[in-house]
Length: 285
Image 1 (tube, rainbow, N blue to C red):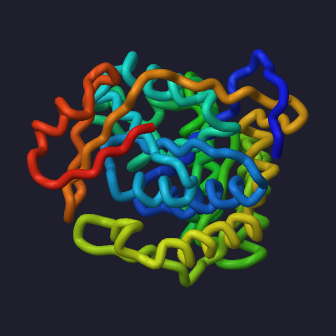
Image 2 (spheres, helix red, strand yellow):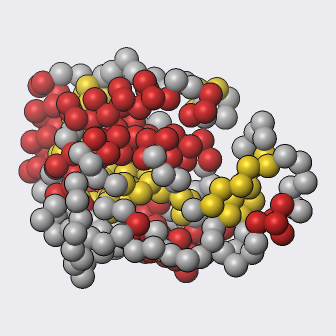
């Protein structure tokens, strides 16, 4: 896909969230990123929080480094800067949330995924595990709509749906009670990401290409890229110029395990090398 001209509008973005952990966020996020790449769309992945494992999978799926958005470590200004400084390097951004949409450190939802969505004004696709539930799913969506008016829930993906009748009742209930479109329906699938006690196994330790291709196939079959892009505001007839930045970003990684230490853009790599005297890997973006 070529992009010969520039528009005033920023490239579109979408945030994938859920009501809780292990509801299907990673499945949908990875599938979306792979499906976007198949269409020739350059996608920029982001992960809410300091989670390096999900970020490694998103990096592999997108073919570019996944950036972190963490209000606790970066503050609101840092989150905005981290996001907007990368925004024009691609055609579309995909942010994967963590935990439940409104889950933070207190009853205000401080440092939550919802705060990221509100701060960046990014529409949310809510992934809901529908196991043994029908109308209650609509009640949950309705509650999320009214819980924080600053969060735009643009669509819902139903996960672990038992069959056509199950799908029909939930979809109609959500449409009737909330008006939020159901953009995809995933059945109960026998697909599992490799896991261990800390969560997912890293992409480097897995047959990631085969796993990612399977996720892309599922996304295209049960959800579809175009429906999500429409909600994100993507317009293939209004191409964008990818801006470049002179700032140098440095990440240094220990050999053998995942530890990153980040320097300000103005810090030289040889200075950072002193912080990690053992053999390191330097990456310049």
